Image 1 (spheres, rainbow, N blue to C red):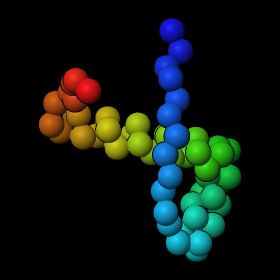
Image 2: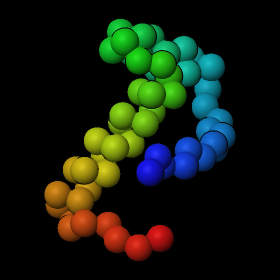
Image 3: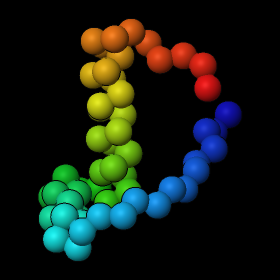
Image 4: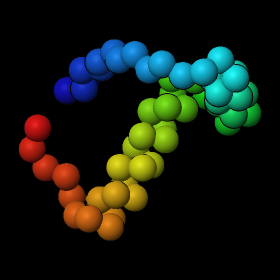
Length: 56
């Protein structure tokens, strides 16, 4: 079963978003996919140090 994708808004400065877009493009990802990649990476690091996150 495919996971439901949710939307959320993040307010950031123009320069930060421009630079982040550059990094995403360098990694052959869209800005959205780069955010998702980094979120998953950070969660994996957190769970490694603090245990699996469970529940809602």
